[in-house]
Amino acid sequence: MSKRPRVLVVANQKGGVGKTTTAINLGTALAAVGEPTLLVDLDPQGNASTGLGIPRSERRLTTYDVLMGQAKVADALMATRIPRLSLIPSTVDLSGAELEMIEMERRNFRLRDALDEYSVHGVPAFSYVLIDCPPSLSLLTVNAMAAADAVVVPLQCEFFALEGLSQLLKTIDLVRVNLNPRLEIQGIVLTMFDKRNKLSDQVAADVRQNMGDKVYRTVIPRNVRISEAPSHGLPALVYDLRCPGAQAYIKLAGELIQRERLRTAA
Image 1 (cartoon, rainbow, N blue to C red):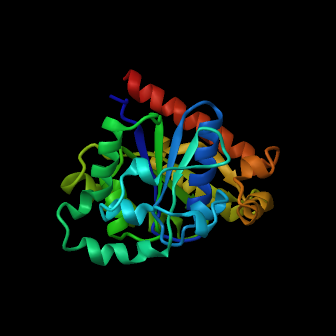
Image 2: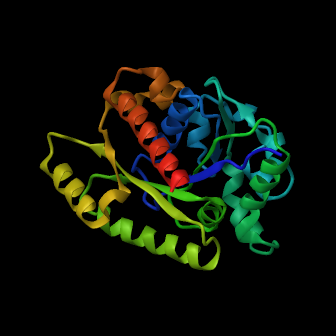
């Protein structure tokens, strides 16, 4: 029997906050330090799949097939060019999944059941499963949270950041109470931080004041190389390892692993 992986969902109902960028580069960094990682692309836009260089024509089995029960996790897995980083890709077909799941048994647990089955029978085992969610609080996001152990929240350093965060926290609480008692917040990562902008400093200070040690020490800077990387089908860590954004994601992965070790030791 394979050891059950730690399942982390990367979620924020707002778009453009660096969610997919965080999922791709965090997964790459975890794989780079020797942690076999699976990235589940649960966004119909399929940006995580594109950002890892997987053409749409090669996405034979996808998260849609897994949710519909038409494919097992083991069948949908794809290798990426990053050693120890695997992917279950997504296509626009996933946009119709929510309507189809409404009438299904265990509609909120379709992803969890599929991942649990793989954890029992799957080889090789993964240390981490990262789930990249759509930018909405939808049935897909609920499936991700029902399957997860913890949530990683990318939060853009902008004026309405805390307002959006409060809505997401309410959703996490509802899922915890009704579907998944083990769900917790792994951490909040501040993204698109511009040190030349006083607003970024103010937002960071406000979030830390409200959320305390739930906020990672590592901050992801606004960085052109991070923005360029997906168009080349590469994580920023591969596209330009030395750029400030790539270095920040390496530090974030180290901080995440440290938090996981402390949790295990507690």
